Image 1: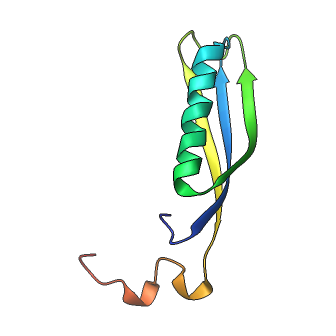
Image 2: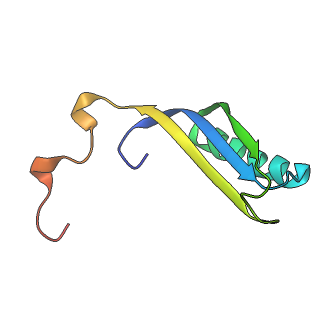
Image 3: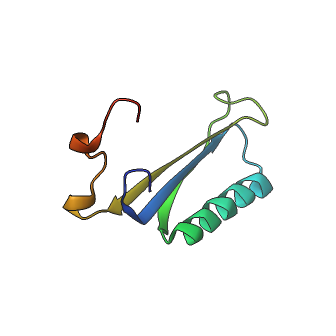
Length: 85
């Protein structure tokens, strides 16, 4: 979206020290809703439980999106950028 591309797919990543199934369920549900709103398919991801790496209540959440764009619509359009943009 920020690069002018139409979203196709998304992969999520959720890590914690000790898995709280309800928290993970809510996070993944939110990611799934975001994918639905953007018309991207949630095609996979990772849930990692790493005791000693994260304190209780601390989560590491990330994602990767893939999209497509026509070559003529790729951003930024370097020749169109001016001072003050």
